[in-house]
Length: 503
Image (tube, rainbow, N blue to C red; front, side, top):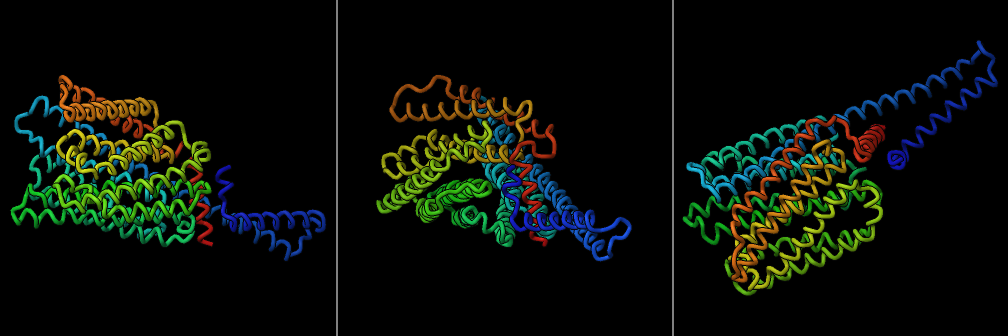
């Protein structure tokens, strides 16, 4: 029913016209023409109309095959990303183990660098790469080959970082691989935006989604200023100083609050537009401009640990308030369409997306209150709050939304072990977050610490890599075609769109 409801009008009229002509021709031949004495004109008309219908059917089948291959490519890319997520969780478990029982020859700081780089540039980057190109598929062989090369080279750089950082930290090889990834992200941002805007039909349909995605790509490129600045800062002998860490936080800010956040919201609006859910365009655009304008001055919130001038606190506070205003508009918009959205989402997707939006609210609230000098100093002094906040944003908001989106699209399947894997992931995440924020609060209030805290963190971290491993294995056992209602209509609709464009 969904595929029929979204069948393009011009294709419907064309098919209807062909069917009517065929039926009229058949009726005329049956009632008015003596068998064996069919007039040449009537015979030509019947052959022409039947040939047109057959040609259109063959073209539609051919395009369906192409889009089906496109789905398979998206699934492979998404599985690679999920594999990185499982490896990131395993590296996180290793970090917990190194705190409890250090291993001779294994550098905690080096492993931490590998953990963070693979999380941002392996799991998240590749996941967005897969989903965005599934939502806005390239239409030419040239673009498809370009993205294929980009993804392959990205894997080379990610694997290189995963192997080099734990061994040598920031050194020649790891810097070469991370720099290569930055250059590849420029390539992706340019080619994706160019090919997405060449598809006029999708551009009109997903105008709001593309506006958010365009901002996300802009912030992705802008975030790279941070890593580029680290080299000159270290060359000037300021490694480990205020400028050094400010460059790192600059990069993280525009990754978390720019690239990731706007990409997630762009995917959200794509879903609404794809299903023709009427929403307030005014609320969506006002929220966009509030978030976009606030994103740049909000970087001030990331440098308050250095105790800058009072004006920097005011700038950060104003940006935080703008983000809260945008949050209010977005929540108002989603509340208005909640029934239509919930009716379409699968049960597990409802849980994951609901949790992601909850953590999005918590994330923006924490950012806003961090503009207060006392709380900014507290966040700097209590390391557990910083780690907890980063995991809340990375796992609770962005990762859960991505997992929910790919389950809804049929790119991921839960399978026999997938549900259990998700339960383990959520169990490990919630328990470790609770422990970190509780330990930080006890430290802040100068109360007795949680006994054997590091050992508990190690034990409660175990379910996460196991859960993600089970979810990953579940994908390898699943078929190539989407099983849910979401994936198959999307393939059908894309094929129909391509046929219409060809005519």
